[in-house]
Image 1: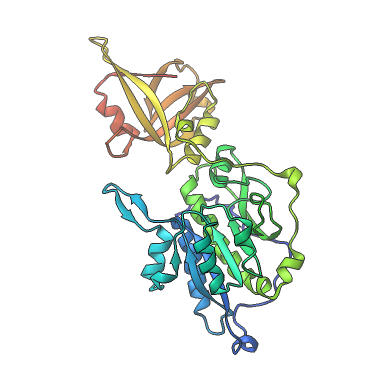
Image 2: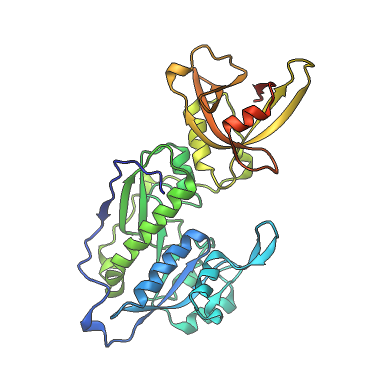
Length: 364
């Protein structure tokens, strides 16, 4: 269940209104256009699934000719070498394995030669994770179209959803744009806006935006195929562009000399990976012995102003199912779920009970 606001409004904001439909009896006898899909993580699989379903519909204008994804990697606890989620989904849908390409880089000559031999008319990217060189972009005559989970030109880059949540945005969306050599700077075909609840986490929002992006793509494909999307696509205003750089693990630490809302937004943004961490000290009231604990902070909310009065600046307390961390400017963060290294996620009450009366203090 997506934690979107009850006042959620999806408002189609298209650079033009497509008047076509994917299935057309007039085109049923024509040869299907060859489309190549590029994507890697699980959120991309939802887009690929939508393309598979649309391509198999009666009178479809296209077929998925090939899939390009990241090479297999070691994942999960067993560290087994596994295909990317997109590759696995394609195999599960009985897509030919010899048409799933996994180049280390999209500029490899062998890969480009194989791609050119397929004569794709259009390429679609959705979180592929590789920079596309000019040699690649010149291959499909209809261009390459990208699904980007932000309202371009805002949040261009590798982590648009995470950086938007970190900034505490009230509105975001998904954009469909032609790919150019500059980062996420191509003309916009269409986009959709949505309001965002202040509790939603990055993985949920990312999945929702790519789901909406796949619907937007299917709606706009006919205009992309007939060329009208290229004519009517709107150039981006580069002066309004903001960047969403890749997140580093070093950013995961929380500093309680910031306001609670800043920390809450960071917890939401970094949920999943790399997560957010804090160090606390458990002090035995009898012996005075101290034990430093590293906590992964899973779920938070901002403490209401009525509950902030009288808090000691260094002490972590427990109230109504939450750990209360005093923050700057007389604010406080309620921590609802935590995880110790090597342990399962537990709620705040279970963690507090496990302290067995020890006093908890913050480390900055």
